[in-house]
Image (cartoon, one colour):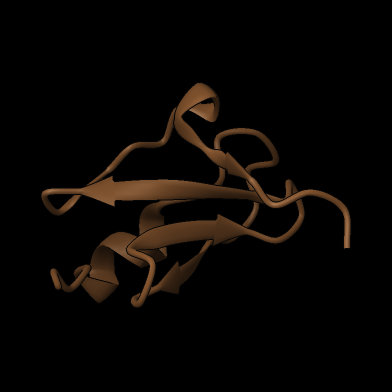
Amino acid sequence: MTEVDPRLLEVLVCPVTHGPLIYDKKRQELVSKTAKLAFPIRDGVPLMLPEEARDLGTV
């Protein structure tokens, strides 16, 4: 599994809400709880496009 640089997490925000993201190491995703979206990380590169995100649905 690829680690995400903590400095990168400090500057990245959700492209939908502009809110904070949480790194899910196991799933290799950046999660926006506010937008209920999970953005994949492929080959160490976060894909921050809403159309690439996994919908976390309503919980």
